[in-house]
Length: 352
View 1: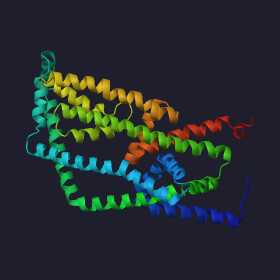
View 2: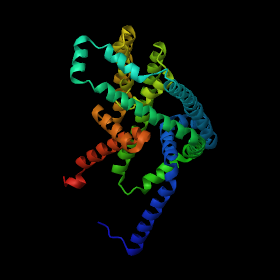
View 3: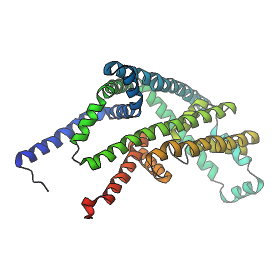
View 4: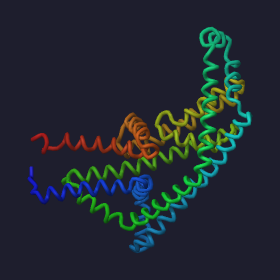
């Protein structure tokens, strides 16, 4: 291995310190920086096409790409968020006012059980209902506390969101304009040979595009379909539950079924048989089919990751990094597979 001189080692130490300090400074805006980079990678083909159509005018092309993202992504998300908050507050008011009594709903479910199930429940599980009722009461109390806390902090939260959005859009403009130059400098600075850098960087961008586009499209489709059937069946807060199903659909295999499954069971146990049957069939044949058909095509095919690894990396990523983890998890998994594949096939490490 090459031996560095004292000045070189000192410079490398300084390089590491200032790099850590730089990331520490960016930490308050890590989410904005992360999503700015993700959007730049995902929409890079669109921006390149606009740049070619304009005859290589980088500033104008970057501005147009930025405005298109605002219209296609930021504005719809803002409108859906406003509707989500409105329906969440309405649902909370219904729970607080007693219009939605979860305890009464549980009693109806127990009453609607078949005779054999009811007798078994009375014999072996007489305290289950009361325990569930206590948990629900505690959950409602916690929700009221969170709602009160949110009402107090709504001003600062809105300000933080506005600042983060401004930082993200500002960064996104320069990433569109100077992205290729920045990427080339990063590739050159990484201390790896081109044999390793090219497949790793290509895999990195491919997985980000496939994960974001695939998961977002699946989430939008399942959330819209779930909200539509909830609206048709007159379930309170269809937009709220549609958004919740969209977020949960980021988890492969399970996803939206966490919401529509219990609602279908509640319909069946409370005597609304046709509503429960329609929701169950719709959930399996329509909502579930979207996940089974689109996700392997949009995510697994491009990332070249098996379904189980996509599931585990997505769940693990979201557990560690929150919502950002649905991108970070599969990216780390794909880089793990790519790095070990390069290691296994490399003659440098095996002496072949």
